[in-house]
Every structure is written in C-alpha cells, then in structure tokens.
Image 1 (tube, rainbow, N blue to C red):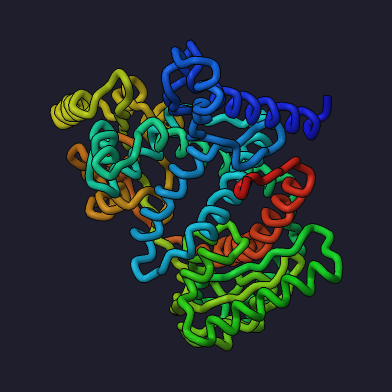
Image 2: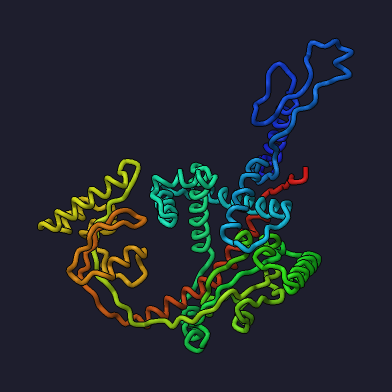
Length: 466
C-alpha cells in the first residue's frame, strides 16, 4: 500500500471513528468525555413520543484539520499551537498586530504540516536526539530565564505551558536542525575555487565588512510553477507591497502573508554580512536605508519583499589572542542534582588548591570526554569559541591562575589558564569568512528548495473549513 492510499485510509478511519463516537450520545454506553457531550431526553418514553423528541446528536469537540501522509493533525492540537503562537508573537513583536484568526490558523497549520513532514523525513533517515542534548538545550533556555533546569517546569507552568509538551517541542526542533544540517551536508557543496573567488570578491568589495539586519515577506510559488502560478504570486506580492507603502506594519504583514519559515517571527532573517547576502538581495540591500523595504523581487522560490531593519560596520580583526586552557566539568543530570554537582566541583577545587594534580583529577572526574582524556586540556582557543560565561572567566585569568568553581549551561567548571599568544590568522580568517559567506548565501536557497520538493511529494490534505 503506497503512502497516499494509506494516508487516505487512516484519515477516513479517524474521521469515521470521531463522528461515530459523537453519534453514540444517548446510547447505554457513554462516549469518551473528551470527544463528545451527550444530550437527549429519557429513553423510557413511548415510541411515538420518542419519534417526536429524538435525542440530539453529540457535540463534536475534536476533528481532523489536516492529513499529512500517514499522519493527521487534530483541531485540539491546532488550537493549542495557535494559543502558544499568539503568546510568542506578543512577546517577540510587541508592536505587531495579529492577523485575522482564520489567517493565523492557516499560517500555524502550514507550519505544523511542514514540521510533520520534516520529522517523518528525519525518522526515515534514523535521526534521533539524546536526552542529554535535550537537557543541554533546556538548560540554556532556563539560564536565559534565570532559573535552573529543575525550576523550569514550574516556570513554564506559570506561563501556561506544559513542560512535557515544551520538552517534546525542543526535541523536535533539535531533530529538524540535525536533519537540515544533514541535507546541507548532502546537497550544499563548496569547492576550493569558489572559496578563492569569494576571497578575491571580499578583498575588492568595500561592503564585505558591513552587516545588515533583514526581514522578508515571501510569496512562494510551486516547485515547477505555471505562468498562471507566477502571475497569481506576482499580483499578491504587488498588493502586499502597496499595503506596506500605505503604512501597514511589516512584521504583522509577514505573520499574515509570508510563506517563509520565519513568517511567524515577523519575517525576521537576522544579521547577514555584505558577502553573505542572498544573490537576489546583493544589488538591492546595500542601496537601502534602515526602515526601507524593496519592491517584490522574483526568485526560483517566489517573490520576496526584503526590509532593512538595521545596518552596522564590523572591521575584521586578523590578529587573534588565543588562550591555552584546561578545565574540569561536572554536569547535572537525573542522578546528579545541581547542588551535588556544585559540591563535587568545590571538593575538586580544594584538592587542586592543596596540591592535587589537575590533569589526574580531570581524567578521573571530568564529564567532558573530549578533554578529560587529555587531562582537561582544551588546546589553544580563539575568542568566542566557548560560551560567554566560560569566556568571561577565562579572560580574567592570567597564565598559571586557577578559577574558582563557576557554572555555565553545561554544568560546573574549574578552569586554569596555561598560556596566551598573539596569532596572525589572516589567511585562515579569509578562508573561513569566504566559506561562511558562501554557505550563508546558498543554505537558505537549498533548504527552501528541499522543503518544496518534500511538500510536492507528500500527501497533504486540509480540512480547516469542514
């Protein structure tokens, strides 16, 4: 049985089951309370009376709103996600006006469909994420909220969020990130010649050190659009452009109309260096001032309206101060609470202060397997290659100095600086920046094209208006 037929059969089965349960109201066996609510008079009445006062059908409380291959999305799932999205939009875009409810529901449902397709593809590729990786991601979120991982469930509850659902969403996001990285590894190829060409371009381009903060609205076209598809998308893009010229808020319009993955974030793309601009924006964005937005720009994905939110210049530094450091890490886990981890790292700190050998203690105790086998040695580190908390402590130490125990998102650390040096990384930086520019320019186009292919080959059926 192929996926399309199986999807139709499963969707029909679930639809029939839900409606059958709803129709059971008034029968001797009550239906599940979460699907229906029974109504109707007593069954002891005479047949004639019963025919005049038949039991009212059950009230349907859930239904299928979309079929995605062999899976379905229920109205209750969509309702929950719409509520969460409304709160996120309010928090991230304080000035944004929410689109009409039906438009927002369609945007959220489209995003849910995309996620289902990507998760199905990840499962087919055998991509999984460990509990430890999920815990690390949640610890970073907790740290930004100034709570511990143990306090996070209660913090989420106060915001009306369920921890189990939040945790599963985080796992799904990490799976999709790994999937997209795998796709880019398979489909995005950068040759040495491209890097050399980019280096020459950067050196001759005075704009390469400029950074642009961008947002966009994308009116997407199908994978192989017909002339009618292109004309329809062009007309919609022109209408949106006119609304923006008349004063419509860009973020609110993106939330309501954009077909880009960042639509529900107000279309925010983020910061891009001049050399990293997508090719379709290269001749447009440098001519804009902050607050400007472009006329519709056509690409293979559809029609883009790009907005320049901000601009800044950052001159690249070729001389780099590297730090040679070693550390001991004690992670928190299901069997190691934060208090226990802190107590253990303080004990190790005292042992080192009283003559204990750092390398031996790191080999025996550190939860960073990559450095533990080398006595905790991290090698020579460039600025910014560690998390900010670690970098901050390291920068304050002189060679030979040992830090007191401190905490990062990874756990509790002791850090010793072994040395510092100035390194000329001009050539390495040129190559790295060239690679990053090409990668940034190509990756969005590769992922968008890949997603279009996934959707084009999937069975997707909407039932929002049923």
